[in-house]
Image (cartoon, rainbow, N blue to C red; front, top):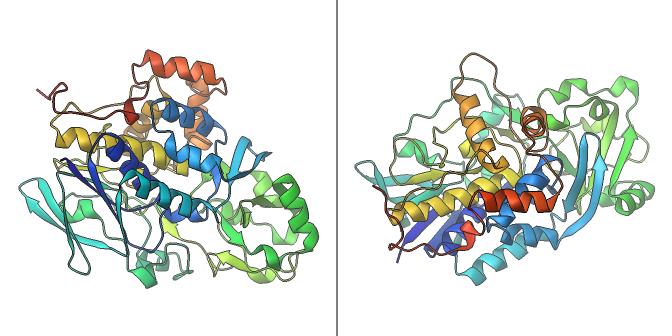
Length: 428
């Protein structure tokens, strides 16, 4: 039986596990902490702007399971500054649903297992080794460990550890599997940015704030001019939110908790605003000082998400480039998990065509990261550089019939939901 090991249990890692299992492999997923989903535990925004088009491409390609679980927890569908048709899922309900689904699929999940090393045979990984000495062997591996942590990265932003959802001090720092396998990852250019939002505890806010937010899903509260936060916008990982409205208002979203669309906000200043006199941060716990620092490296990979220099290692999510968002993680995770099985079976690897937003995105990000003649950004279907490209190429649409036809014309309908066998076309 084909054996695939996925390292990292965020949205990307979970999607890789689902795709590999759907392709017929035995799958082991190891996660450093005691919960799945990583930053998905505090995110909660789906389908905004071009993410709707990309998500439905992925669903029609057979990667629908995680999106369906998300849909089951959606609290609101709203427009907010710079964003249309955004679905806000309940961050307090989603993780158990995903964990249960993986178990029913037969994915073997091991929590509290921090991968720290690899066993190599030439240019192939034979196994990953955890901090406690546990060895996980496989025929192909998917790295979905992200780009945040360890604490030293946060120190470079003079914020120290802000006790974010990644909880490095508790569960240990993230370790790059690609680097352990001998891959030279790029760290000399500065990519770092703070996570783009934080969470406030609902019970700490005025009743009128909570009631209006739960009723409408989104709430803009003007910020007194002397508390302007323009300087925070440049630090955001999510540059699609670096708009004037976010400097002039507290932009709040109801994701079960109160999502504040700012990387951080000084607590004393926050409490000077009406309705926020007793405000308390939920994530990061020191959200008045900073947020988690991400995008600290680039792993070289091709458009099939195979890591360059290792024959049987694939990457996804933030490890696949400076890609921002849950949708982006699920899409790249699905491709990486699917291709890991193809690699194990010596089948031709799948490259998504650029006629699809998903394929164009993966290829475009790689091209941008390879360029040395201009400043690189953070890439997302939801805004900034790539969403503009989607519109220019006609890849952004809310017409599901058009998206369905696009996927069928590419010959990829249901590709991620079908088992793979050794009898299919082998690599030459």
